[in-house]
Amino acid sequence: MAVAIKLYRMGKKHHAFYRIVVAPKRYKANGKYNEQIGSYDPMTKPATIKINKERLNYWLSKGAKPTEGVEKLLVRLIKKD
Image (cartoon, rainbow, N blue to C red):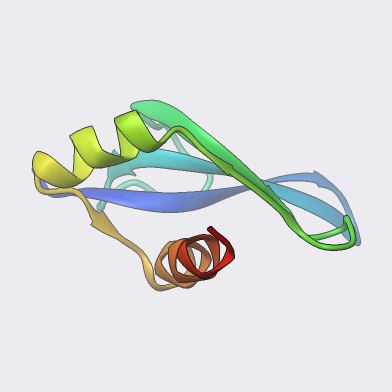
């Protein structure tokens, strides 16, 4: 089964924040997930991105593919460091 690293939307209307989760690709966006590896809060200035790098590297080594949105966050996080 293919695994993806996705954004899981939470929060109230117009005040969203996201969990970065690992879930099978066939599951819907806010369905079950295997593990939460980080969070993203776009409402703070500047936006807050927290990721457990060890778990991210583990899942990437197992073949998990980040979605387009997560990939953009990872690029932004790399530029920040």
